[in-house]
Length: 137
Image (cartoon, rainbow, N blue to C red; front, side):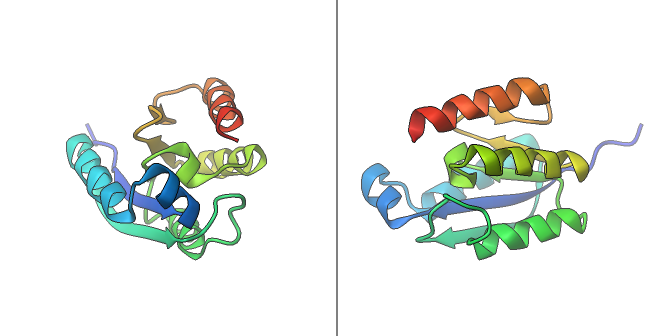
Protein backbone atom coordinates (compact mmCIF):
# COMPACT_ATOMS: atom_id res chain seq x y z
CA UNK A 1 0.00 0.00 0.00
CA UNK A 2 1.21 3.51 -0.83
CA UNK A 3 1.97 5.43 2.36
CA UNK A 4 0.79 9.05 2.55
CA UNK A 5 3.48 11.63 1.92
CA UNK A 6 3.95 13.83 4.98
CA UNK A 7 5.91 16.98 4.13
CA UNK A 8 5.76 19.73 6.71
CA UNK A 9 6.22 23.44 6.67
CA UNK A 10 7.09 24.56 10.18
CA UNK A 11 5.63 27.98 10.95
CA UNK A 12 7.08 29.99 13.81
CA UNK A 13 6.15 33.52 14.77
CA UNK A 14 6.68 35.83 17.65
CA UNK A 15 5.66 39.43 18.13
CA UNK A 16 7.61 41.68 20.41
CA UNK A 17 4.77 41.63 22.95
CA UNK A 18 4.53 37.81 22.88
CA UNK A 19 8.25 37.43 23.51
CA UNK A 20 8.07 39.68 26.56
CA UNK A 21 4.79 38.30 27.93
CA UNK A 22 5.21 34.58 27.29
CA UNK A 23 8.98 34.22 27.03
CA UNK A 24 9.26 31.79 24.14
CA UNK A 25 11.62 32.56 21.30
CA UNK A 26 11.66 31.61 17.65
CA UNK A 27 14.55 29.25 18.43
CA UNK A 28 12.60 27.45 21.16
CA UNK A 29 9.55 27.06 18.92
CA UNK A 30 11.70 25.79 16.04
CA UNK A 31 13.50 23.22 18.17
CA UNK A 32 10.28 21.84 19.68
CA UNK A 33 8.57 21.62 16.30
CA UNK A 34 11.53 19.90 14.66
CA UNK A 35 11.37 17.30 17.44
CA UNK A 36 7.62 16.91 16.86
CA UNK A 37 8.14 16.40 13.12
CA UNK A 38 10.80 13.79 13.79
CA UNK A 39 8.47 11.99 16.21
CA UNK A 40 5.57 12.04 13.71
CA UNK A 41 7.85 11.10 10.81
CA UNK A 42 7.18 14.31 8.85
CA UNK A 43 9.82 15.39 6.34
CA UNK A 44 10.55 19.09 6.88
CA UNK A 45 10.43 21.12 3.68
CA UNK A 46 11.21 24.50 5.27
CA UNK A 47 10.95 26.55 8.45
CA UNK A 48 8.96 29.75 7.88
CA UNK A 49 9.77 32.54 10.36
CA UNK A 50 7.91 35.79 10.98
CA UNK A 51 9.72 37.76 13.68
CA UNK A 52 8.19 40.75 15.42
CA UNK A 53 4.92 40.47 13.49
CA UNK A 54 1.40 40.30 14.91
CA UNK A 55 -1.03 37.53 13.88
CA UNK A 56 -4.01 39.88 13.68
CA UNK A 57 -4.14 39.24 9.91
CA UNK A 58 -2.58 36.77 7.48
CA UNK A 59 -1.69 39.20 4.70
CA UNK A 60 1.00 41.16 6.56
CA UNK A 61 3.27 38.17 7.21
CA UNK A 62 5.78 37.41 4.43
CA UNK A 63 6.88 33.98 5.67
CA UNK A 64 3.28 32.91 6.27
CA UNK A 65 2.35 33.97 2.72
CA UNK A 66 5.35 32.06 1.31
CA UNK A 67 4.23 28.97 3.24
CA UNK A 68 0.73 29.25 1.75
CA UNK A 69 2.25 29.55 -1.73
CA UNK A 70 4.30 26.41 -1.10
CA UNK A 71 1.13 24.63 0.07
CA UNK A 72 -0.73 25.71 -3.10
CA UNK A 73 2.20 24.45 -5.19
CA UNK A 74 2.03 21.05 -3.47
CA UNK A 75 5.40 21.35 -1.74
CA UNK A 76 3.93 20.79 1.74
CA UNK A 77 0.84 19.02 3.02
CA UNK A 78 1.24 19.72 6.75
CA UNK A 79 1.57 23.07 8.48
CA UNK A 80 3.09 22.61 11.92
CA UNK A 81 2.96 25.40 14.50
CA UNK A 82 3.64 25.66 18.22
CA UNK A 83 0.21 27.08 19.11
CA UNK A 84 -2.85 28.12 17.14
CA UNK A 85 -2.29 31.76 18.05
CA UNK A 86 1.07 31.61 16.23
CA UNK A 87 -0.95 30.94 13.05
CA UNK A 88 -3.81 33.39 13.59
CA UNK A 89 -5.70 35.36 16.20
CA UNK A 90 -8.62 35.99 13.86
CA UNK A 91 -11.65 33.70 13.65
CA UNK A 92 -12.38 35.02 10.15
CA UNK A 93 -8.82 34.27 8.97
CA UNK A 94 -9.00 30.83 10.56
CA UNK A 95 -12.13 30.00 8.59
CA UNK A 96 -10.46 31.14 5.34
CA UNK A 97 -7.35 29.13 6.20
CA UNK A 98 -9.31 25.96 6.99
CA UNK A 99 -11.11 26.19 3.64
CA UNK A 100 -7.82 26.61 1.81
CA UNK A 101 -6.21 23.75 3.72
CA UNK A 102 -9.09 21.49 2.70
CA UNK A 103 -8.88 22.63 -0.92
CA UNK A 104 -5.18 21.75 -1.09
CA UNK A 105 -5.36 18.56 1.02
CA UNK A 106 -3.16 20.08 3.69
CA UNK A 107 -3.40 19.64 7.46
CA UNK A 108 -2.74 21.94 10.40
CA UNK A 109 -0.99 20.61 13.49
CA UNK A 110 -0.56 22.87 16.55
CA UNK A 111 1.54 21.16 19.19
CA UNK A 112 0.53 22.96 22.40
CA UNK A 113 -3.19 23.22 21.59
CA UNK A 114 -3.50 19.57 20.52
CA UNK A 115 -4.87 20.64 17.13
CA UNK A 116 -4.55 18.20 14.25
CA UNK A 117 -6.92 18.63 11.33
CA UNK A 118 -5.74 15.38 9.74
CA UNK A 119 -7.62 13.43 12.42
CA UNK A 120 -10.43 15.77 13.51
CA UNK A 121 -13.79 16.53 11.96
CA UNK A 122 -13.69 20.03 10.42
CA UNK A 123 -16.73 21.39 12.29
CA UNK A 124 -15.45 20.13 15.64
CA UNK A 125 -12.03 21.63 14.97
CA UNK A 126 -13.47 25.01 13.95
CA UNK A 127 -15.62 25.16 17.07
CA UNK A 128 -12.63 24.21 19.23
CA UNK A 129 -10.33 26.68 17.48
CA UNK A 130 -12.88 29.47 17.77
CA UNK A 131 -13.11 28.86 21.51
CA UNK A 132 -9.31 28.97 21.85
CA UNK A 133 -9.09 32.25 19.92
CA UNK A 134 -12.01 33.78 21.85
CA UNK A 135 -10.47 32.89 25.21
CA UNK A 136 -7.07 34.36 24.29
CA UNK A 137 -8.34 37.65 22.84
